[in-house]
Image (cartoon, rainbow, N blue to C red; front, top):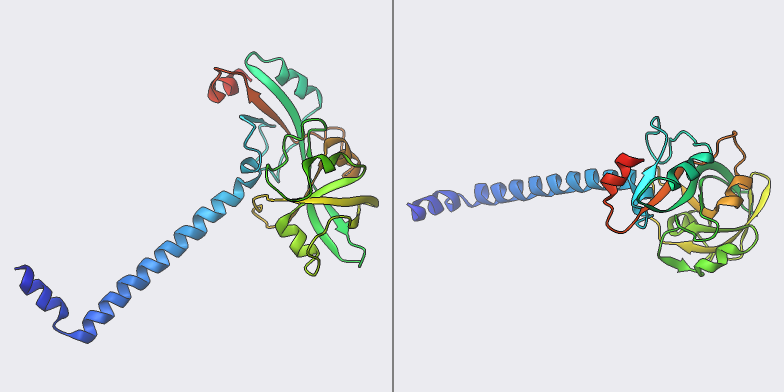
Length: 225
């Protein structure tokens, strides 16, 4: 029976190769669309993937994504810090701004303000520069994709001055960050600098990043918070 089935399948050479091509092409399309779908999901959670050290993200209940969030009052940082099972807490700000290069090129960016002392919130892998360079005055780090977008002809953007909301910002390094859903330019700086670069309302803190104490599950800690 198997031999008969093989003969029926391969008896007409043109139909056989047409069938093989159709199955292969359909498989390729399915794999491609699945890859696009997974990539969109990964980009939607890019900010979370960029901060693997945080066990819990605390935000306003109305917040939808990392880019669309309702700011929290600064007192919430200490309220969360007082919850049993919390090892550490740091603030994080994510805000939109417009940057201008020395050549006059204007580009929309997302400014990410990380903790002043520990730099928690900064991606782990550096492409150029060192993490300590972020402690320099007016220092910012740029994601690798954004650096190629703003400075396509420059192999290294370090030392470049930018105008960020009428203030000076100096690129001190580039980081390997997952691109966001909108593929915008990401600028990383210390929290205190971010407050100056992106003026806003009374409440400025976007998220509270929390580390769980030893032996405390993140799900349990989330329920306590």
